[in-house]
Image (tube, rainbow, N blue to C red):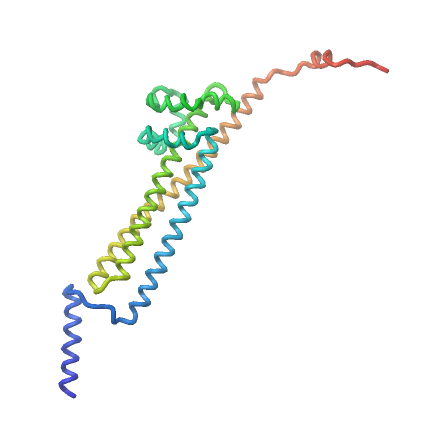
Length: 251
């Protein structure tokens, strides 16, 4: 009996020492591991639900932006935008200040390629058709480019979310399938790092959402300004002319 107790003590010390030294120690026999694995499964589901929510929101924003451009050939527009992707990225970063700069000096603000994009899709005519005149036409053109920049950025953000979601799923699978404590710790550390990256993406998504709201408010102010200008420049009605065009006879 005494020999059995000593042997058990030696075995337990060996396992503890091995774990402390970083030597792989089997964890399959641990009944608590099944519970822990379930927690990781739930965590992955929460992660995926969050990513799916963000992707739906981004798609909704992109569709709204495409509608606001007034262009029918939206697929062609998105493909054409890829040729000025870098420039659109800068426009996105500048936000509403780009619109102000463009109104002041369009030629200095845009590359020739981007100006060609405006011409190809007859953006100026579309803006005039909406009732914009003078500098407001430029503001409308700049808003179009800002909307296009938002679509392009949304595509990249959505792609990044998909990549990070897959990375997290792979890492959590590694944690769940780890065969020893060292492998578990390594995978857990990798998950923590991926979580930090996701928090950065979450911040970018929130900034993206806020920029779309700001752009919508800016566009609304432009519409109001266009309406007011149209009212101010409208010709006063001629009551004499209106009277002469009607045949008033007394019966």
